[in-house]
Amino acid sequence: MEEVFRTNDPVKLSYIEHLLAEAGVECVVLDRHISAIEGNIGIFPRRVLVNEGQLARARLALAGVEPG
Picture 1 (cartoon, rainbow, N blue to C red):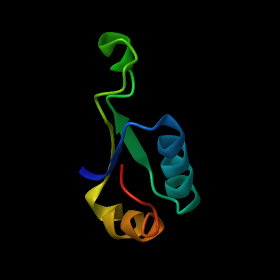
Picture 2 (cartoon, rainbow, N blue to C red):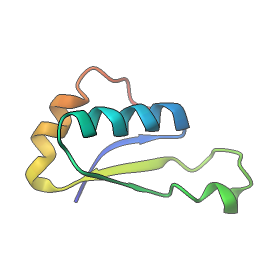
Picture 3 (tube, rainbow, N blue to C red):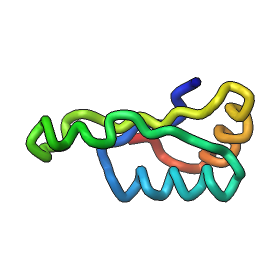
Picture 4 (cartoon, one colour):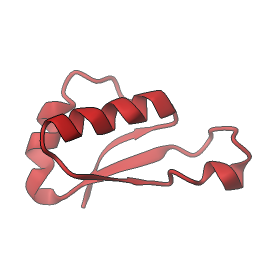
């Protein structure tokens, strides 16, 4: 699996998941529940990963989105 996006913003994370789903790309979000450990201060970014076979399609779907 390859990382295609990283963000601390839960709204942007939801948008990224939506864009990938619309493009037919399955993704996995890592560190989604780390906020319970960090005390909801948002210092640990959530990472979005896709399968290597869908990497090109995922990058195309996320081409206009600003990182972070």
